[in-house]
Image (cartoon, rainbow, N blue to C red; front, top):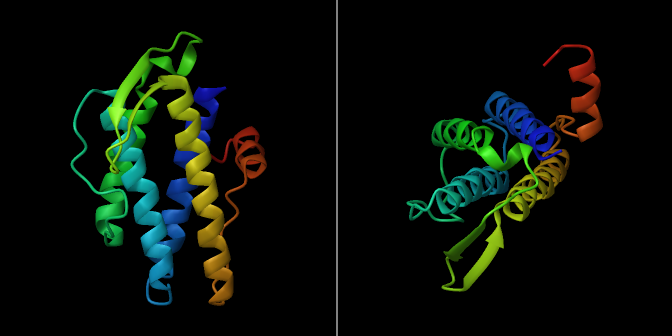
Length: 152
């Protein structure tokens, strides 16, 4: 199921990025801030899973071009995590940006990353609606429907 959530997450983020780029002149800053946060957080979690110190701030604001690069890097890295297809999941030890120390299984981290993206994509959709921009449908069921029709 994590492999499927990973595909969904990557699809939804790419679809949203396209919509943000198309509407870039009309977007409120909040959309860029939230989307930056999604890609930054993905990059940070991938770094932690791979035992590398993150080189990006969780709330660092990026332009859409940088977001696109970070999204591609983190999506590719997430897709290659070997634990997407297994119940076995090592425990990762890490320190958060607020200096908290934690130990969490990779599977729980991955599920968090995918849910985190969904949460913030919904916030972006609300912001787009409030600014008279039609949001894209990034619902999981939409992903499944398109996948069955071979449109993705």
